[in-house]
Image (cartoon, rainbow, N blue to C red; front, top):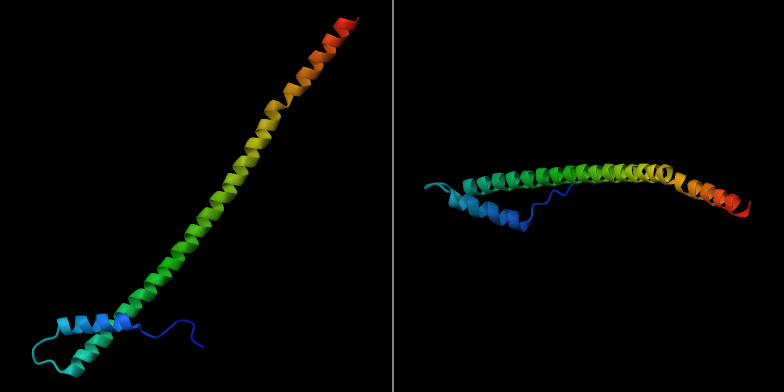
Length: 108
């Protein structure tokens, strides 16, 4: 079973026939025009395949970039949370010490 679709679409065939007729020279036979149309069809088909391959590669790259940036964002958030915890950690201890000092001063 073929991995890629090898059939040429009807639109491609029509486009190729139009181009072949538009570039037809005087004295050119119908067989020659058909051969030119087939060549144009193959060219269009190859172009479409290459475009699809490039689009897939681009999507993979975008997906990888988004994945990597998401991981970096998670790391930044984690680092910021740990920094906030260390910065704000002294506040409850300070309040506890002040309250005990106040308690000892008030009830002694």
